[in-house]
Image: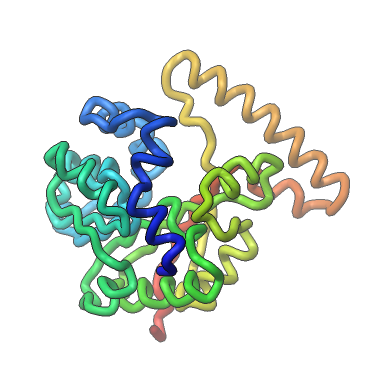
Length: 247
């Protein structure tokens, strides 16, 4: 990590998080569990003994969610001391402030799931490639890599891409597939990150978004044909990949 990013991550919570989202709390974590269940639940292992690593875990909200679901072999790592301290102060165990590259180089090939939500965009392309290669090497042959990144194909992608000075890049389905397949993954599948549709207001947002989404895809279809109908236009993309058999 370069000196510029080190300075920003040292004060990531105090200069980037608190003024937008306030101080984290267990109450906030509980509210997020319903969203995680909806958006991520289908991708996590069924075996509660699975070993899971959350890279760029932030304040540990996702680690806490997994622990509440009965997963005890869950570790969260992050480069920001402020983020790790925020989660540790709330009682979330197994949060570590460490360089992700060092951590992965020292890890055995015994991990069932690696999660990297809102992480790859913080790295330049060669760094992202190296990181994904390391992740492929620490996963069991049956393991999976769950990743979320800003979607450059969304008309609103700039809101996320440029919303953090430590961001370097956004992806779309084709470039994310290219990165993961070049890094040792196969069977890569990508999904939109839509409003969850939980509660009255959220359901309204979900319906409105599906209408807007259809209009966006119609615009793409009018220009590029059938590929436009299959495009993902949400601000974020989720992808799931498994290590290639020959890795």
